[in-house]
Image (tube, rainbow, N blue to C red; front, side, top):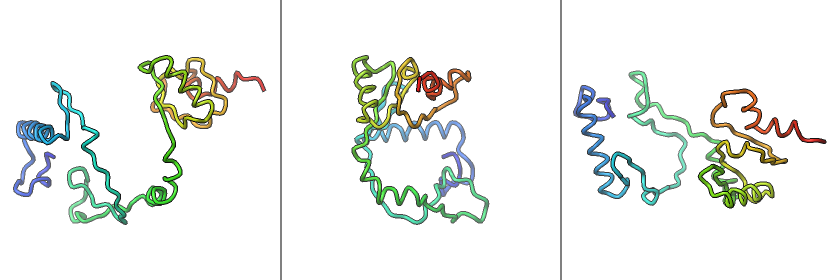
Length: 171
């Protein structure tokens, strides 16, 4: 947003003071319009202010604020990801009942146990877990583990990915 490309009447980037003032004005305007909720210095997008619209495109126009381009390539278009376009047109309807839940220390123990049981029985498609899931819970048919970051030690990595639990099982 500091770039002069974002502002047709500017030839220089915004100064720090101008940028800070602009951001504050934008946040206040979005709060006044009901798009953002603000409490002290924290700002959050209101989920009820989003409107998703389906649109079939073959190219995505570049965002002038985030796209870095060589001079002379200003009109370069980005091809759409055809995998996702086809997926949403055909297969996405099959997963509309797919449900995932969080599994963290913030979830009540009773709810966590219910979610573990539903996950074991295949009634819950995904669990989004903090390290609570690695503490002795055995999910025998686990097919995929996605680690958001790499744990600090190899044994912890093995434990979080299910390797240790699988190695300890008897045939």
